[in-house]
Length: 125
Image (cartoon, rainbow, N blue to C red; front, side, top):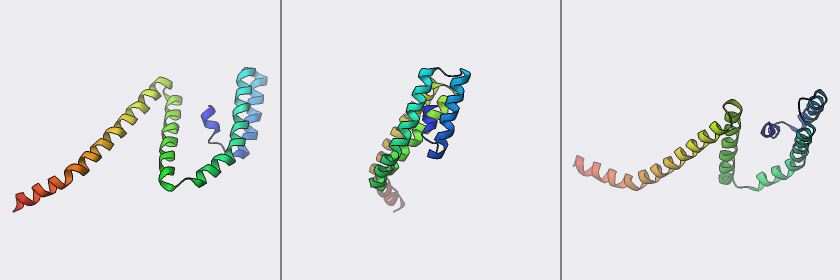
């Protein structure tokens, strides 16, 4: 649930604080968990402008890597919500292995492509 707080706009944090208060009054969450969630809300509100400034300074190619890691974190969070933490860890590990394997295949393809073109040209002659 804490990762979902990072995706909410700043204006919705007031509703999150009110929901935490209601959940504390009802007894749905403990006092310690409520204080942890409130601390997360305050941290998100304070760190937002600094993260925006940092992302504005990054070059475009580095933003693609940041976007890749953010997408993996969002994928992992959604899977842990649906399937559980261990299944999400397994799925993210398999996905990372597939990405690394695809990178090696791309390097091999780039290295072998000139030889394949030469073979194709001499076979036609």
